[in-house]
Image 1 (cartoon, rainbow, N blue to C red):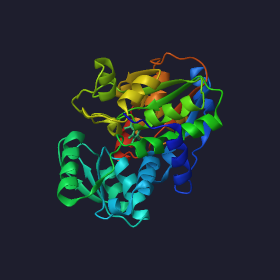
Image 2: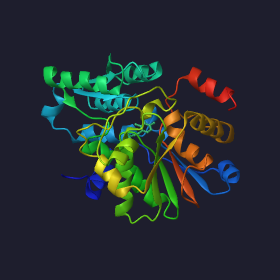
Image 3: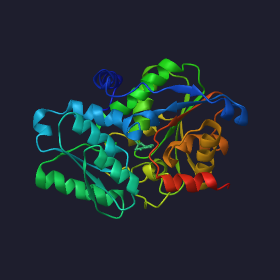
Image 4: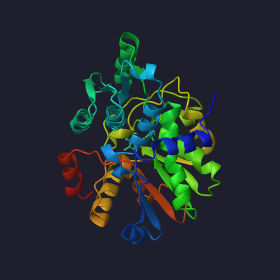
Length: 322
Ligand SMILES: *Cc1c(COP(=O)(O)O)cnc(C)c1O
């Protein structure tokens, strides 16, 4: 099976330069003091559309042949790949259709539309929205840009790894939110190629953690998607997974899970200490550090992957104290 390699990621970096920002890596003095270790934050939520997903979506769009753009692109999304693909397509004058399940929060559906995408809200969970999407590929000849199991998407996400290697050669652990594994796989390939010594750790939510269960089983397996504050991490990795399972299995040092309460605690810490509003999926790394779930000491980087949370939900989280 072909694999994404460092050349693909370097090419992606050249291709998407000018469409995305090299996101800041900042030292969090407050969290560092609180946790008694250096904590750095990589602010990927500052990307346009509010998540790192613009990297993979842009790389995928710029890599398409004219014939693949002709009938428009389509995808299924847990809520952040959708607006990213919509924007990347709109910038090139290509039509996009984004399939979202009924588990996707309303603000994320609106985010697709305001970036020029057509929404199709159908299905109980991510897997059902993917079925709807595959039907559109068949019936309307639309081109599928899968949210994670696509080499251009993995390579685009991998450009974050190049930035980390450039900006922070002296860290001990890097914590990356994990769902389908495109983000983690891309970063893993880039860091390995740059000979990073940091321990690379995937973090996801306790319930419905498809990749973690699949790693345990030794092969991709399906789990039931449930409601969680980390809604962007929902959905299965796919029984026919081609591009992320093996790379995560082979190159990532550890994968851990955190509870919804631990994630909310981390969101509060980021807000009250750093003034940052991030969505649940983005706070899992900080949650893992705060709850001591992570087997790694020393300087840590947490990747803050997105900010697309509904105002009511965010208010609810920051006004609780447990
Ligand atoms: C999609 C997403 C992730 C996980 O990315 P995968 O490539 O599916 O593992 C993490 N955080 C946010 C905010 C996301 O939107």
